[in-house]
Length: 421
Image 1 (cartoon, one colour):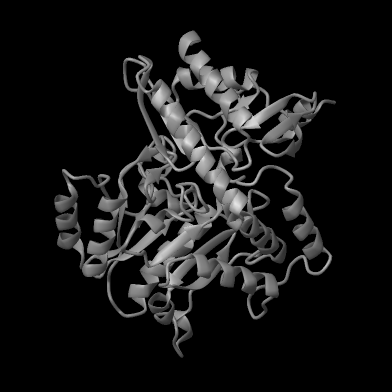
Image 2 (cartoon, rainbow, N blue to C red):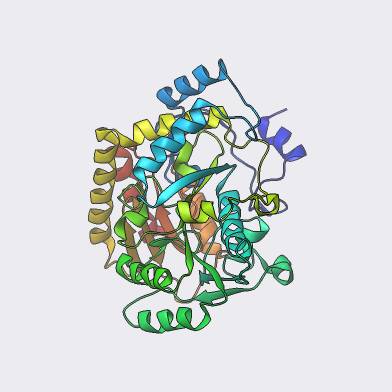
């Protein structure tokens, strides 16, 4: 029996209407920016396998470090025990983060990193006997699919079945020159009830790669600090070079109280989440009263193998060659954006760091469920390129090892699609 048939007999895929979806493509190996199916066809992974793979597939250095760790220690309970990979990863990460980040809490993925951050904020106030439970977030936000992460995400078709069960959140517009003072006044008006403000810095990924200016986010974060409102910077998507700097918050002068990481953290090797926080937040949980403990954990918290993968990924990320590749991809994207910006089928084109997104002109508003999305997706698959449009928004988010020739091929196929579709 073929891999496809074996899959269809027993597997339920994510974000997939199983009754109408095309059969999945069986991938048997990966190398660099490419994935290969069982027939040997090469697909350029232009979306980094859901934004996680920053160094390319089957990276030999990461594989070596993972193999070495597997021969020493595969896992140990992280309550009451510790190990060197977790300590070393925390030390290395904190050196890259803003100076106010002091403590590292391990979890399993991006959603859980956000859940931990929300719980830290809510219990921070609870432990001090202060009733502050309201949360502020941006409209169209996406922070994950677990319940807390869904609650602080924009309401949509993805949350509709659960809306009545999600806790109340105040949603505000993205900041710009026209509304920044109004947004700050909104925060001041409800500050005594606000536990925290959570945001995707500079780019709202799942909303369609919506981008906004760092200076206005900086003003909001500074205003929250002035008004005593905790801030959560969700760097699950934007972390590790995606916006052109190590982290999107590196564009800000005002630094967040809490930060969330996953996706590129292990270079796309395996699942891991991290939530970091300030000493002030950590100290609010220190007490002789055990009821002030942060009651959160996962069976695979700080898994040594995942920590080793993350350490290897960080080694690669900090190499000069990787940083040069990030700048190379940025420059290529800018040139391509300039080339096609005036095409009649391009409504808008936007770019931040290694992320480029173009909004396809459809003559009307479109949604994630647009039929154009399916046509574009299949068109590029046929051409050996993995792109997953968000409705009518087509974006490129490649591994940093992608070659100039591969980028040129992707750009050329987009230009052809603009003429043919």
